[in-house]
Amino acid sequence: MAHRWKNDLTHDDVTPYNTYLNRRQIMAGMAGVGLAAMAGTRASAMTLEPNSYEDITSYNNFYEFGTGKGDPAKHAHRLTTDGWSVEIDGLVDNPGSYAFEDIMKNMSVEERIYRFRCVEAWSMVIPWNGFELKDLLDMAGVQSSAKYVAFETLYRPDEMVGQKFRSLDWPYVEGLRLDEAMNPLTIMATGIYGKPIPNQNGAPLRLVVPWKYGFKSIKSIVKITLTDKQPPTSWNKANAREYGFYSNVNPTVDHPRWSQATERPIGGGLFAKRKETLMFNGYENEVAGLYEGMDLARNF
Ligand code: MTE
Image 1 (cartoon, rainbow, N blue to C red):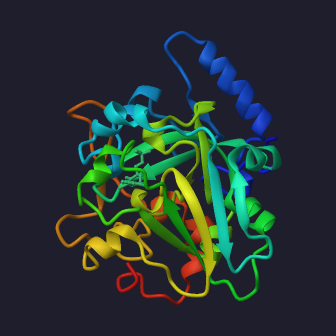
Image 2 (image 1 turned 45 degrees about the horizontal axis):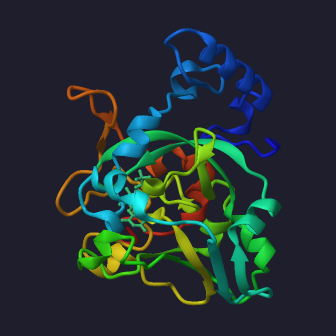
Image 3 (image 1 turned 90 degrees about the horizontal axis):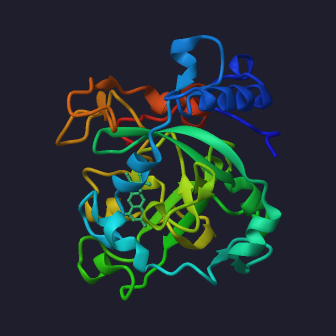
């Protein structure tokens, strides 16, 4: 299952996944140590300490359930996810409605421990379970004229109480350029810490693009459209001056109302030290090439 394990490290750095798993089990067995991710040898650059399950599932942004960080955990239990399917349409050879169970039968799910950086300048480290978006797109058969991928979240105001308010223009929509979508770092997450993804984190499947601000990682996806035009995105529609299409994590390009140079790690307590934000959230080796020759201050 772990044949394509990738962390935020270059290939030379990465400890083979089995060694990593063994270490993880050893660490987990040591009282109080918990799930430390020991991915390599150069300790400072290598070690990603995942946040607790509690942090990850109680401090959320999911405006369909309210605008407060605690609202999703409070209200998302009302969302029913059985019988879930994803409509894949547009410039694909095999358009149609794909049942979540059928998708899972065909995808190889693995663990990815990723940094997660919200545009609001807080951050976490999250052990996702998921599969590469590319594998799903390959199943749908992307046509050569496709240039972008558009995503859409469920619209069901009876269950998603926040959709009764116009905090955003519903349904939530997002998009990626096709090469970003096909990048091996881009995953569809279906779990956290080995359990099915909780409703407040985007059940049953959500996008995770670890080098972009968190709002690109759209939750509870019901529709994926391959298109030749740059698709609209929710936060860009709400405020184009503040939220661009690319939204790559970039400590040198400030948000109009705050700096993006540092971040506040969630879970470190009230007095936790802020950390310096890394270019592309630390995934520069893997993705900088996607943006060669582009002005990233203009294409923010
Ligand atoms: N997806 C939908 N459908 N609705 C949302 O409000 N919020 C985004 C993103 N995906 C959001 C969404 C934002 S702003 C962030 S930071 C992340 O989800 C938060 O993901 P998390 O709650 O799992 O940490």
